Picture (tube, one colour):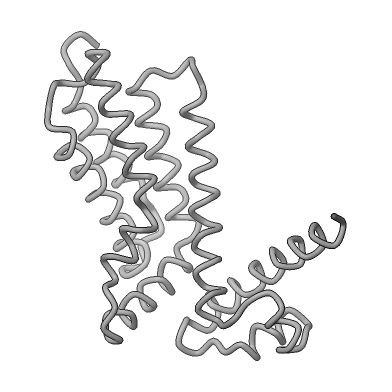
Length: 200
């Protein structure tokens, strides 16, 4: 059991350091050797944990999303939150994660462009990674409509409006280099205000 725990701990350390390499060097310029060097291990040792740099990068993205999902789960489990509060807090967590990980999102953008060039669908890859968050938004919206907090609007359209603002935040932060996301948070608040019934 101690060996498994130690293996997992070492893997997490590698992921942390590898993420710094991706941020410093950019996806294209990172090599397995550079990651091994940053971790203070040999390439052979690195192969015990990961097959290639792509696998390491995808694990880094998974870690980010897992952290966001855990924070959202905590909000969902707080019974003192109504649907409106849950939705607002959830989207704040997402936008804050984008802002805090802007360098990673910049690297991710380059990675997705390379995927498209290689013939793979970046859209499919992204949709696969964000499906849980989109389901959570649907769940909150449906609950809000059921509780008559939100207007009886098309849930898919409501979700798309919110998700488009999240994508806009990623674009502005990762591509345009904007560091302040307050205007985006205000835009999300305005959209949510539009969902609210008069019974609020």
